Length: 136
Length: 134
Image (tube, rainbow over all chains, first blue to last red; front, side):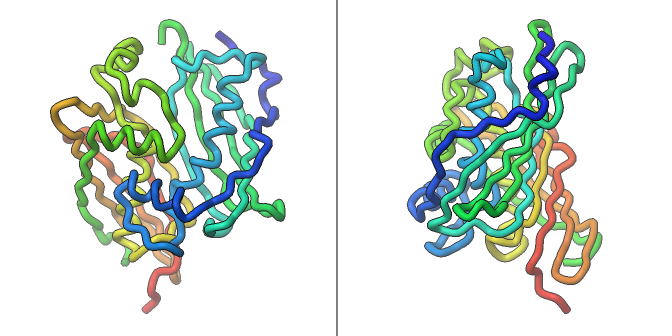
């Protein structure tokens, strides 16, 4: 299935900010075998918790028409502007950067900008999502 | 930490229980990480680890090598092979690094992550900061 080129530049977000709590960070650290003391900077991949709902907003958008069962996570990159802190109110807005077809699959490159309550950039979370073709 | 230094290897195990804990902590409840039938329906041999859990363990290795959290300025990986997690034995990951650049308190580390001898992450690289300077 070829995706519409109109998808490029479209944005997806979840509407309400994510409040970073010590409990949530401790749970994530424990689930990733990472030592954590209250007050420590969260593990480096923690922003996926904030970006994930924006990614799901894209994947579940009926207008876009993706089949969730055929989505594979191809690449992921985090680029920090500053460390995340407990109490941060973070919002993620995903933008579709690029869509291309390869061997029957669609490859969707996205950037989720994670910003704080002041609207300042904290981290860019780039995800490449592969929508496998029927025969891929 | 100087150019050419080899870091690790470090070993981490992933069990089915770990996948349940990661799903809860991350919000990623895709059934291919929990349910044998769902994984097999898309051609996988059994349930597979979340790619993001494998990436998190690579970050955890960086945490070990750089002396704590907060030192990662950039981390990027490509998910090249699934990590199968069988019901009766954990998946064993081995993670090593090599310092490919060093300037001031910054370094670039190339990561190699394997499971049962096969690379599961490709082009994996981190920029770390806040290193002690000579």
